[in-house]
Amino acid sequence: MGTMGWETYPLTPDRFEDFSDVINPNRRANHCWCLSQRLSTGDIERLGDGDREQAMRRLCERDHPPGVVTYFDGDPVGWCNIGPRAEMSRLARSRTIRPVDDVPVWSIICIVVRPGHRRQGVTGQLLEGAIDYATSHGAPAVEAYPVDPADRMDTVMAYVGTKPMFERAGFRMIGTTGAVSSRLPRLIMRLDLA
Image 1 (cartoon, helix red, strand yellow):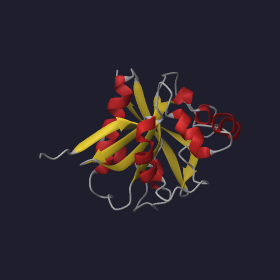
Image 2 (tube, helix red, strand yellow; image 1 turned 90 degrees about the vertical axis):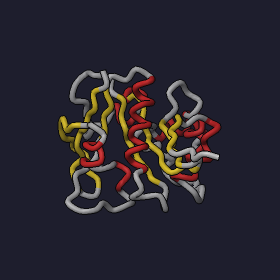
Image 3 (cartoon, helix red, strand yellow; image 1 turned 90 degrees about the horizontal axis):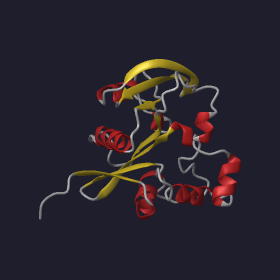
Image 4 (cartoon, helix red, strand yellow; image 1 turned 135 degrees about the vertical axis):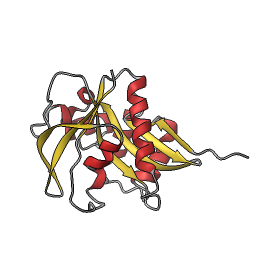
């Protein structure tokens, strides 16, 4: 039997438990469920009857599932929250992460590597899969909003990613934001796909 290696798939309802294993293995109800930049509290109430997990499950049923899950040899090891910026209501209205132009970008707002799999190349595979997903849906460009730390990032706040991580994937810095993470300014990194 050959090895499966790396595979990345959109987060459809049948992959929800794999996604949960990556971002919320203890299934805590009050966990963010990667909704903070996507939905307002009112949207969560309407979509998930106030239940964050249920709201995320319902997002998985849409034409643009809310991201991709990366697997290594069949095990879910990473998650990237990506989609059209216009479909992320809180990000679209953000006063601190403003659009730099009118390009209908897809935005990466969260990257998570499952504990026990960090520093093993997951991020590169995850970003490649996320970019392929955006490309297959006609995205003209992908943006991310990372920080540029002098040293290693606190793992709690590492979900925004780092400038070098995105540079390795071909992104370039095109601006700054008014947002911060771990007291560091968040940047605007873009990869043009067209």
